[in-house]
Image 1 (tube, rainbow, N blue to C red):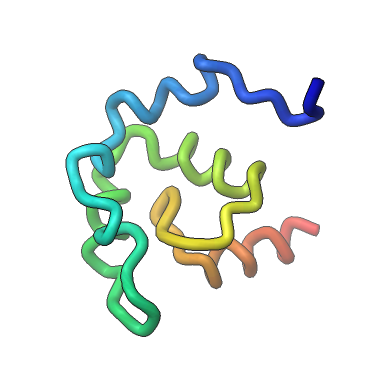
Image 2: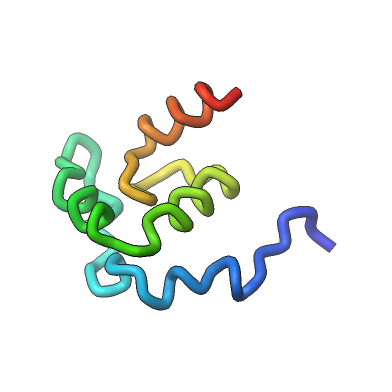
Length: 81
């Protein structure tokens, strides 16, 4: 059994997440493209905190998750120790 088993309850935020209404290219923009619009949508989403926790727990390397870019999540994770 894997150490990081994810339950349906832990992913329930995805059902109402605003990102589900936008295409993946919105949250996974081409290198050098702006992430501003994706971050604005995240800021209005009730699942933002759960999304960010998921990304940090699962070491998501790409895209905007919980309102933070890859670099911002990396910095946050480093600051947390």
